[in-house]
Every structure is written in structure tokens, then in C-alpha cells.
Length: 225
Image 1 (cartoon, helix red, strand yellow):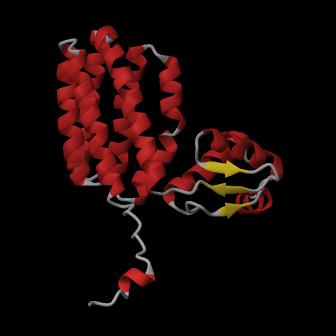
Image 2 (cartoon, helix red, strand yellow):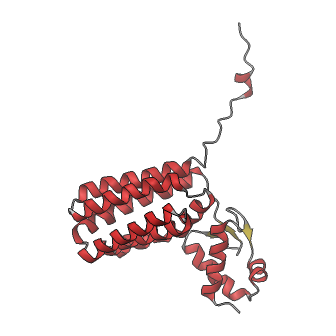
Image 3 (cartoon, rainbow, N blue to C red):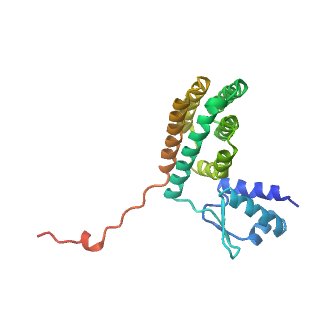
């Protein structure tokens, strides 16, 4: 029988892969049957995944995979841009030489993965890169909020095929971030991270088009004089 952590990881993995789609309704009983476990670890897993922003629950006990639309995506990236800027400013002042060397190593690993078209691995390395910056900033409250939606953002990128076009920009941004951090240039680091997140937001929003405005029937059929 799986542990609570096992079930959380399996449900999370199915959400990220798309096996459990955004907006899909789920029940504790159906998930227990799906993973061959009792209902208790499923309850615990749903509570954890709700905290990560992947699952929504109601007072009646019903649950669903979070619905995602253009407004929500825009909001998530706006929040990340604000928090990443706060973190990078602190990191520019506090980052150590060992942490800078770790960033340089991870950036080389990421570039090698992109070269091999290992985009899943590059995505994981990208997270590790940002985690080092977060640790250097020594601002656990900001990092906690930022981490809350990490798996949700991962699920979004998985659905839209996080590929070479996006990673070419990531590589360039990372190189300049490292330069700014080495120079303790907080203002430049903030400008780079703002652009970094803004570009990611624009790429993601391409997959969530604006809804078409409905024109009232009387305007469409208005007669010409």
C-alpha cells in the first residue's frame, strides 16, 4: 500500500502529464481505486495538492483538478515576476562564491540538456538554478509563496511543450543573470528577471487565446440606409 507521499507524487505526476486534465472532477473513492489504496492517503494527498494549487476542493468534499484560463495564467506569472524580483535583489547582495559557481555549473548542464533536446531534464535543472538563487536570498517567506505554484507551472509547461524556442531565451537570460550577480548589480539583475518572467508569460499566453467578443445580433444585422 502506498504512503501519503507516494500517492501525492502519483496524483501530482498524473496532473503534470495530463492524465488528469485541468478542470477534471475527481472523487476520493475514484482516486483510491485508480491507485489501489485506501481512501485515507488519498484525502491526505488532496490536501497537500490543494496547498500546491493543483487541486480545488469544496466544503462538501468534492474535488477537481484546478481549472486554468488566460486570466489565471496571467496572474500566476505576474505574482512570480514580483517575487522573483524581490528574491534576486536580496541574492545580489548575499550570494556566495560557492553559490555562484553552482549556478555556472547548472547553467552548463542546462545548455547540454537543451543541446540533446532533453527538455524535461532542462526544466528540472532550470528549477534547481532558481532554487540556488532563492537559497542565496535568505528570504524563506517569499520562497514559500513562490514554491506553492511550482508544480502547477510545471504542469502548464508540460502541456504546451516547453521546447527549444523558449530555452534559447532562458539560456541567454541565465548567462546575464550570473554576470549581474557576480557584479552585485541588483538593479540589472531585477531588470533581467522581470524580462525573463515576462517572456515566459507571453509564450504561455499564446496557448490561452483571448475569448472572442460576441457582437449583439442587432448590430450585425443593422441595415444600411
